[in-house]
Amino acid sequence: TIRALWQVLREFDNNERKAFLKFVTSCSQPPLLGFKHLEPKFTVQCVSAGGSERGAVGGLLTLVGLSPAEKDRLPTAATCFNLLKLPDFRSKKVLRDKLRTAIHANAGFDLS
Image (cartoon, rainbow, N blue to C red):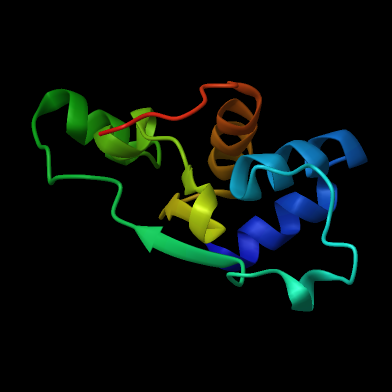
């Protein structure tokens, strides 16, 4: 998933990269002195896509490469920690689509 993330980010255009940066850090511009000066350091946390749902729908989704939880879960971020919480998506296409949805949603803070 981490390798696929870097591949997806390389495929993004500059506007999508800025949106990603803003999504993770709350700032669309890189640090003036470079990313080695970003504090706290950028971190990716791989998170489970969710429970072990089973049944007809779950079985069908598993056959096409998606778990039921993976179908709905989006990447999230903790901007004060420069932390990307990334579900373990099974395909680069799903990762790309979910990441685009997340970074362009303009959801703001979601206290859970």
